[in-house]
Length: 122
Image 1 (cartoon, rainbow, N blue to C red):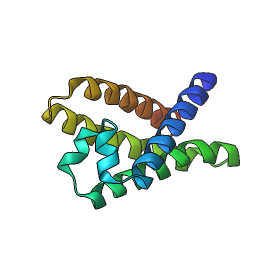
Image 2 (image 1 turned 180 degrees about the vertical axis):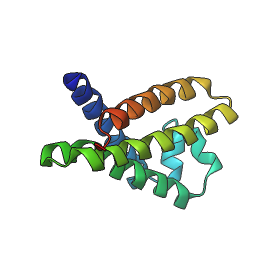
Image 3 (image 1 turned 135 degrees about the vertical axis):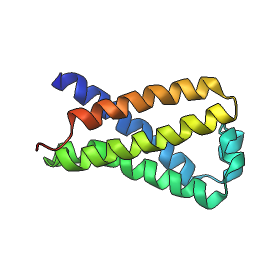
Image 4 (image 1 turned 90 degrees about the vertical axis):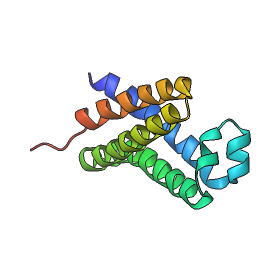
């Protein structure tokens, strides 16, 4: 179980660091041109905010384990990713982009797994 958690945690963190960085440092038009048609519905400031939360959440899923503080920061980062993916699934279903909704559902399940396994001890 611990190895599975490390693998899922690493993949999830890496994916969100990469995608968050891409959206944060690219213009809205470049995001749309690269297949992010969902961005047509959002103001550039909202896209940058989503990207920043993705980047920070991705880092908070990976880095705390290396520093020995994995419980709290990992839980918060994975929970943030789950919330972002819930909103993303809604947007893609509304836009009838079902393939993207399915992919984001996988990310949602990964984030829920990491949040559950990385939750703070009571």
